[in-house]
Image (cartoon, rainbow, N blue to C red; front, top):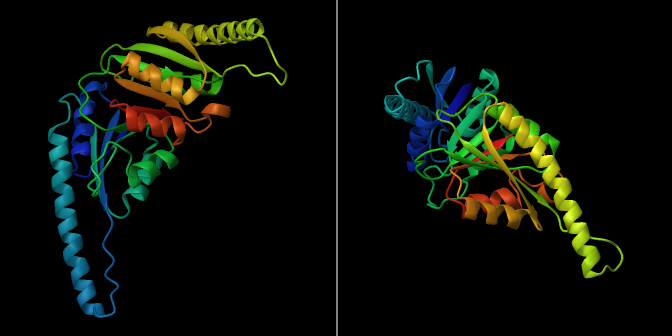
Length: 287
């Protein structure tokens, strides 16, 4: 597996580097740091002064960036042997995404927030854009990760399942994990009035259908030697997944980005947005 690690010197960036202890030694680990030059296009600054200032700022940024990358490398697991360091002057989003594409990365690891003024466990603008446009799975880290043993895997359909299983097939984690496959079946609705008994029958049928699909997904994971269980919820997808995350207390949530209907906004919509705000564990989006 090829991993891209975004480095910016923030506390979340430190948590990202520490989280690598829970991953199996990758085929390649690339540490990336990028900073955009400040805009010096002021009317009172002459071209000569502007060029000199840009040279000085560029030299300082490169020096600081190399120091951050070197420090991050010293904190990597000792069995990470294929390590690359990339420092570029440019917008972090562009540099990280270009690096991920050119290296054909399997995972981008990044912190929820950088060094901006807002210190909350929510996605910053750079993290948001990387997650939105990444060519590969992304994992957003908000706090120190003690271990990765329990994984919650919300699934809506076959496409979600296939992308998640494909990623898990890379054997990304250092230790064995327990996976709970979870699906939410929307409350059955009919265009005509129904009795309580009819509604109950519809709910039972819906849950049985969803459970059958989940059992098939769980069986595929069992064949890959993953410990796995499945559970079905009924109702609003966003609320049900949040409640399941709170009760199961996973170390990691893995979600797909190709969903329909109530889960179509997994990418950065109601479900993912709520999870980033209300769950302390990292979220890994597969695509």
